Amino acid sequence: MRLKTKEGVLLQVSVGWDENYPQEPVIWFRFDNQQLCSSYFISTFQEIPDGQGLCLDGGRYDYKSISADLVRGCKRLIDQAAK
Image (cartoon, rainbow, N blue to C red; front, side):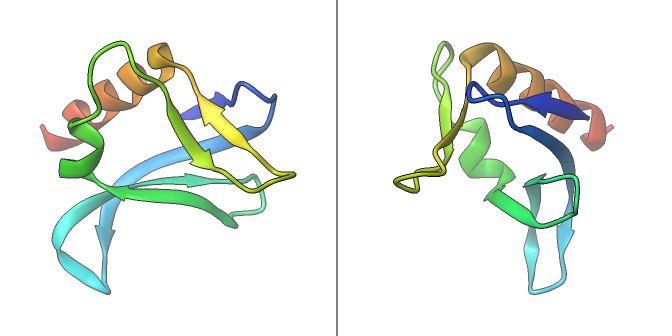
C-alpha cells in the first residue's frame, strides 16, 4: 500500500515479520528508495485510538505524520494481512 503523509511525502506501507524480533509482526513505513521512515509492532499500532493520527517521524525539519483516515486504512491493511 502507498500513502502520502500530511506533509506530502510518499511512503510504501507493508506488514510482515522482522527477523530480529520474531515474536510479533510489524508494520513498516518506507520511502521509495526503501529507506525506513518508521515501524511499529502491530499490537502497538492497533492500539491507536479511533480518530487519532500518528507522527511517523518527529524530526525538527523532517516531520512526517498521517491522518486518522490513513491510520484506519493501515489498520485495514493489517487485518487483510492477517487473513
